[in-house]
Image 1 (cartoon, chains in turn red, green):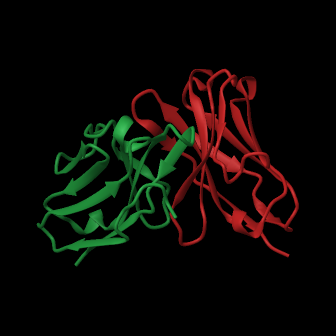
Image 2: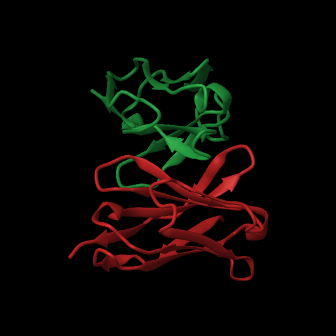
Length: 118
Length: 110
């Protein structure tokens, strides 16, 4: 069974940093690209970042470019999102999602809440 | 403000057909595949249409997708109470070099 489990969220002050982790199981992680998507409370989905299976190709949404960094460790079946210079507007549930060749984001984690507040 | 435009709400009674539109431009929908996601309350999104009009296994054939030019549509026929959810369209945007979602449509089954 495919599983994605995020961790690392919580309460952080504006300007602070946080590192989200997503550990996967049930599939050959090194063969899949991964993405991060977030959802602010009561709002819609926002795509944040993409990393290719080998980590050599990375994309970011303009809203997080220069502040967030995506990375992966294929030996640990994990993908990460390092978030810096956090703002109140970054408050959201953060999802990691597997990218399948045709279906795009076919499996998602349960989500991890990040709250940026003083 | 989302790059892709969806109506904020849609509704129908059980058994009826509901449609949700998604409007973009030539740099996104016009040149790329469209995907549709269903998000039930408190759950992660689930892909229900990929590559404009393809259904993943397990998605009933009363759910269909289409694309024409710079717009796409999701249709759900034979509405059921379990279809009540938020629906999001998404595609790649060449100008932004990133994926974009529509603002989402809340479907209510009256």
